[in-house]
Image (cartoon, rainbow, N blue to C red):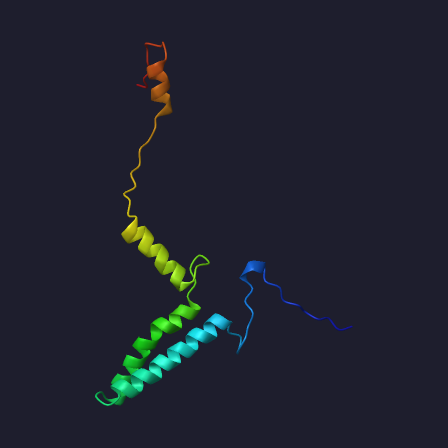
Length: 120
């Protein structure tokens, strides 16, 4: 008897279709952009810097593009995350203050009871 195992994600919404080497279309596009940026930086800056320095500059310049394809935080892509951070920290900053309500004290103030029990 032959059994075929079919893998199903526990959460159906997390499914991503693999286009190229298991990468999604978004990851492929951002990886291609990162490669193009790295090659462009290599040929532009390679004239003035040594080989190892050019390599580091290429990695640093390509990193944001590569990050854009693979970054996910609370089901948000990098662009959505950056917009949320800008909104919450720069455009709509608010100071949250905690104010407690003592329901027992309010009830005693509004009641006819003149004595308050105290613990000794």
